[in-house]
Amino acid sequence: MPSLYLITSGKNNIPKEIIERINSLPIEGKPYAAFDLDNTLLIGDIGEAVFALLLKKKIITNYSWRDYLYLLEKNKLQAYKRVIDLMQGLHISILEEITLQIIDSKRKVISIEGYAIPLPKPNSRMQMLLELLKKKGIAVYIITASNEVSAGMICKKYFNVSPSNIIGAEVA
Image: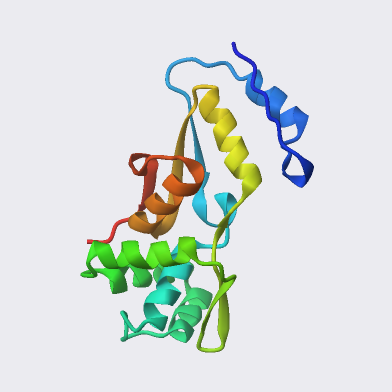
């Protein structure tokens, strides 16, 4: 088995014990690892950021951020479903454009209705961890409640994970 080496500096180092555990993993069959996207691989939530920007730009007009927060408090699953329902019928190019604006933004937050929604950024340690797993021959899958379009774009850019390995909410 080839050894994995990680050359980084400062606070982004993956602990030696984790590298050793990855190196010692037996590779049989078709091994894979699955990760959550929002607030795990990303620091922040791509789905919430996309939804907030859709509201701010008035692409979605029949709902508010406050409505979302209210439903989120009552029932998270229903809140996530409602966001995806509100995106139904949007052209994919709109979701792609909004996602690019978020990914490429130098800002830290989206301000809407008096709230500051953080723009998601990649967790550098998780980027390195995924790279180590892939070098070991372990397929990486990402699961998210965020829409698949945005998840696919951000995962490809920051984690080098193909959209075909992402399971997220589908927007028709």
